[in-house]
Image 1 (spheres, one colour):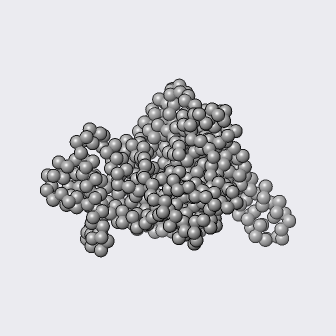
Image 2 (spheres, helix red, strand yellow):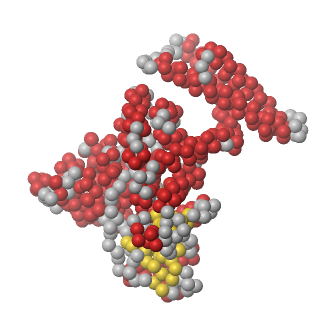
Image 3 (cartoon, one colour):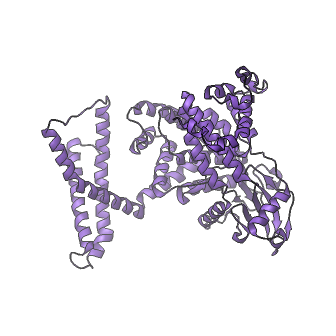
Length: 568
């Protein structure tokens, strides 16, 4: 039975029929009735005449591009669908780049809800009348969005705060809409073959996970506290204080930020801010969040960025954050350094090393196309360089070659693009490359040469080699057995085999030398000084013996390989 048939058997399908008709009617109005027809969902629009499904498209909307009509349809369908569009905008590996750019313009212009409902949520979650927690509470919200609205308030102790209150019944609304989205995604995958490349069910599942995290304000408060720890050494950056006793899963109370938006020219002039300093600080913070903290905004936009007096900045809204480990930081850093150094070979090699490139991909052609993009941007003047567009073009190219880009890399590309837009609003001719290139290259070199990082890599290599030594005898016996039975065959069909062999040989030689030197470094700086004080044949002595033997073996192989190929 198909995925769609399974979904339609569920009782929730009948409960959501009214909402499904509402959603499909919006889809028809925005000119996508033909998609409903192909997916078999046209009958739920309440338009049983199949010809009328097409005729009911809004003529005024038909003049717009299909990407714009998708965005407008999502905006008109409310909170869940707006968030879906925002998640889709972070997946150029699934969504066409033209639609990605359009979805980044999604406006979260949802009207506020009555203050009585906001008070009811606060009192239910905090367990008492609102006057018991706040000396004052403004009835008019400061801002409203698809998930929540924000009210200004004062604590009994005098601190100015804001209270973020989740929309009433949001969980039920989201659950119903997610059910519908699964039905529609399953219909598309079952009946519209060209929709399968966008992997609608995968996108919906990822969206559901993200939305669950974003609608839990306890998770957001934890994110804020984590970011406050990260920026503790940065006096020019501020993240609001939170109040745990006045917060819950649906309520978040935090410090009021008395800052101004980037486009508030009058306030910036009154504070005599230096736009260049603010732009550089924002760029530095954006890069530090990714490559030093490993914790960054997954959905950045200018509304999260405030300017404070004395050329300081503040960040708000930590509901959607990305977190990456040290290995991922190293991989992403290599990606960006190769882009900024205009080195397409380094970039493609990284894709290959990480297993992101299928064997059928023409790596040389991909490298050539990326090189052309890099050459075009490298020849541009400072004011013409758009690093966000540059990264987007490279992403679009590699996706066309069916490279499965890491989601973290895509989010980082969006983060850099957003920061560039903010910086250019402050300084129109701002050149992010001027700030990014030296910072990232220095960080790359520092991470590569960092003793702690290096020793961890050596230990990891030792572990891998030990695993290889353990399984090698069995593997060799298996190969010999197959050879005796005449079952061993080699199939080599790569036209670039010699080029690949030479490249792999150089990589192997360098790896052996790195392992050799790394073994020596660990031996002389850590193991031997301690082994000298340890009892004979203790664990440290065995470490020294194994590491020394491995270093000797690796060094011998490296020298023999180099003598044979004469190439490092």
